[in-house]
Length: 232
Image (cartoon, rainbow, N blue to C red):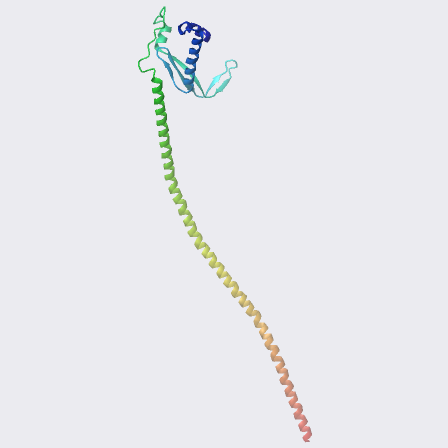
């Protein structure tokens, strides 16, 4: 039986073919939308429709026998109710006229979809709350772990800074000592250079003085000789 035949089968009960087609379309659309959203559509005595997730797996191509990788997917599944199974198995007989004697829905079950939706919403909110609690606990744990690490890094920086400060002082002291030594060496070399220069200048000054004294002595000797000659 296809869809058109189904519509023809229920057209007399619904008052016309168009009304039957609209009813079938409405029922199928509601069932498909509910299953796609992840809800379970259950009809008492007939069966239930639900969405099932299939994990990734390997399958074989029936034509070539080659092993093929099948991705993760979701498929609809129908599970027949006990009344439907009994009728198909033959343990119960179909009535000759009228509707099939399936179990009627209990009172309050027609609003069960809303209740289940609320329950599913509550479960989802509970899952979100637990996930949020886990994330906050993980963040706190990471913060607690990060605090000692930060303290250790700060201590390492402080120790390195303390070590670097005496090293800098030592280097500055050595540089100052070296500068003092260089200045003292420069002064000594300048003094050494200046001493010969002073000696040479003093020698030059004394030499003309000696020449002048010799001249005066020779002049005196000549005057003495002249005076003696005149006396004679």
